[in-house]
Image (cartoon, rainbow, N blue to C red; front, top):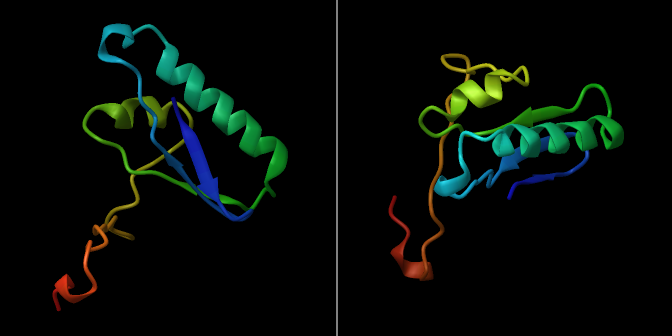
Length: 89
């Protein structure tokens, strides 16, 4: 499975997942290729597509022109707390 979320100019490629029993068969490459093809059809040329690559997945994404952004930018994340009062400062 895989999906892209975005607003028409900025996108994130997320949730690219292939069952371990079916990895190394080109399925991930096909998923990313299809998503990028669709983005090419619906988004303007100046659209930005980002992602977070886990482990060796960076090699797959590099085949589609993705490059590391560090040190110019650094990926950051946080989970939204389940309770309003549990946010740390």
